[in-house]
Length: 380
Length: 153
Image 1 (cartoon, helix red, strand yellow):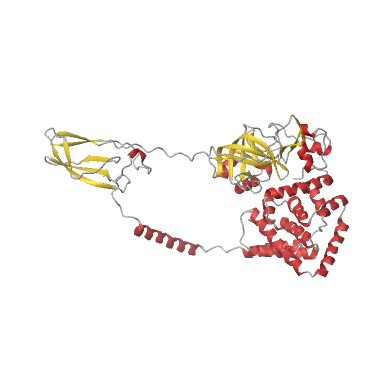
Image 2 (cartoon, chains in turn orange, cyan; image 1 turned 120 degrees about the horizontal axis):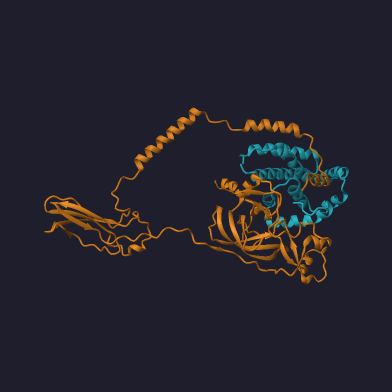
């Protein structure tokens, strides 16, 4: 809306100009300065910081858990000491002093240097109560490498080789959350007929001035980056995503044409959605059967209405297409929409961007665009 | 967020005037709004700042309206009408705006003149953004005819 339009509305509403603005602005500026908090003196800040640091150090020293022998990060381990005898060829023959059920557990045998003819081997074993096989353990093992090892011990010039038992099966790598299907379906859907007419053409009976039916993706609206607006949209969005439009369904909610777009998330720039998630975004505007449109707009009339679909732009300057990817600033506010639906974070199509000439341009054509670098900064 | 008093003063004043229809009172309420704003913690978000300002102004206008005796209401209203009649140059537009409800007129002022974001207005009137958009569409349909434009927003 231009300044002239604003002035016309202001005058039509009968609002006169204020008289005391300048005096009050000075008074307000003076009071604002007085209300500002005084900074804390540096000496107080330093003493407070030193005291806080001292408290942290004392806390760390007193409360920190005492060191315990780490047997691979699992507390459920018992130590079995085994005394071994040397055989004639120098191999260690272990005699386990207690019987344990090592099924599904980890057994590590290490040989210690011994003098004379006896050796001591320390065997660490999983507690016998653990019945699950190692490959099904849900806690991550601290040791990611294979437990198989070979140690060579020299005793009385004899080479002794002790090898450990079964190697541990490595835990499966942690993967990202599986994609979710968050799509919803509108109650009523409209098909687009062969004959279409824009809302403007229908209401005025004249040809479109170019605003009505948008160009198919190749439009080139004026570009003028608006950092503040983008930052604002990023802040209020539930999620900022690059998503592919899988399906576009035309419907209406409370007599208003609405387009329900099923999208699949390809990249997430902000928010708690995951790559691969599918969701439905409801955007104002779209196609509506002409007879349906005429029911709600008495000024509109067209012969053979049942042959036509009416296009309501709702501010969209560049038509979306199925299969194309766009950046969406979405809100999870589903008031007035089916449960679980998503809506644009800001008014209509200014929350949807398409990549053109290295820039992301708003479909609303409100001179709103941003670059990859700006997007990266917003994420930071 | 630092407040641009020169910009916001006019906007809050217009909003107050539309509610009380009295120039002096509207200006008093505008100034009171900003003084009370100073007593609140400062928000970093522009939306929250605007919402706070309009909430304070709206409450002050409601309080002011309660103070006026019933006999004075018609007198005050007629003062506003006199000013309106003197200033109006676009009779058709005036007729369209007159045909709107008080709340719709406020919404027109907030959205199209003061350019308050949709989500802030929706919170002020405790309605969803979709409901607000529907109302705006309906109002726009009437305004378009008289302003002679297709896109007002």
